[in-house]
Length: 530
Image: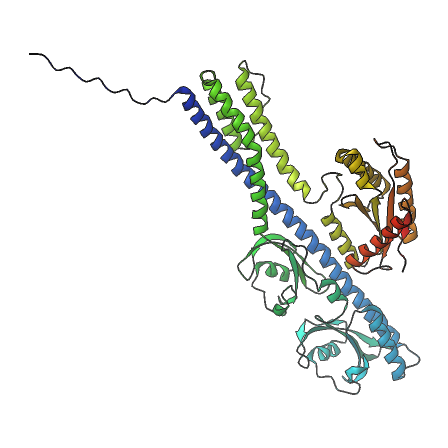
């Protein structure tokens, strides 16, 4: 009887070393990339938040200084007028009315001005349409000013007669003998035409959703993009609570609608108001997603190269991969400077190490570059358009006279079309270098777009700006460039407030002057003229 033969076990499906190493390397790459992405994400998020908070705080501080300066100017105007009226020789109603009209119309500080005697009777008012002369004052704020017999500033309140929000500021009148005569007061309607509304009526800072609002000492909204919310009590807001305590700073906070915001805030010393500049936190998330997509794009090619090398030389790379993966894993988990890696005896490992180091350095450079790009033109290294627009708006808000020079490189399209964009870029960099060397400390030089540059010269008259522009034009014309031609420029000059009172109007006038220079034959400077 024959014995049964045992069946041989079927050979199982074995994984080749090449596939195993490819799988392992792929896993290590994905894990390392994830760690790098998480680390880069957190680092970039912190950097963007810090940059936004610092920028918002700087803007809030500048605006609060503007508000403080305006209130001090308003106070000085009233005080001067009160002293003048108290010592006028001609005290006829007509002469005082004319003086009040002049005071009100010359500054746009106040919507109306009243002169009240010590008994609360209105002696004069401007404009005359108020029709309050001879009436007894019923306003609690004016009565309080009369009672104090001193400088007075009311909290913003709703007028019972008009239903509009306003505040009242006054100065006492004393004659040469020290006898109290009454109060000279001005009212400011927050939603009417006046200096405050002109400066702070437009609350949007940029298209990203950043905006600012102003609150009173009691925590009520005075200026806000949503005009329907004016006088709304927002004292429960954490930022507003800090302002009411007289604090200034920056913080992440949630607004009354439950939206996370990055806020910079600054208190106004002269009246207890507060300025808050906020940016939606979701803007940071959008920028981070763009950043992560760039990182992924930069790491795809090294990964493909790495996978190919593993496929070809799997049997020689097993051990070196473990060492390299451990190093990359440590880099991803902790803040670590990459050590200087010496050439490896194994060529493939050496190539892979170089690729990983280059990818890491590239990620670091991209992170630093994105932060710099927020305020700088990449090609020339000058200030960019957004930063210049903010500087112009701040100078206008502070009522600091200045001139702008708009410079355009002549026939730049011909340079690009004839000699190529690389030559055109080199010309732009040379122009930027000449401009940067030609301005004073405190002046601002920006690339506004394409071949157009803008210079902001604080406290500079048009004639002085013309001298600067001509010096730049002649220097540029005499500068050698890597082209068989001379590079010239046309320039237009406009002055604030002579030629315009808004940023758009001022730059438009400078562009008109630039167009005149172009039409007149180029390579010249023109000051705007009506």
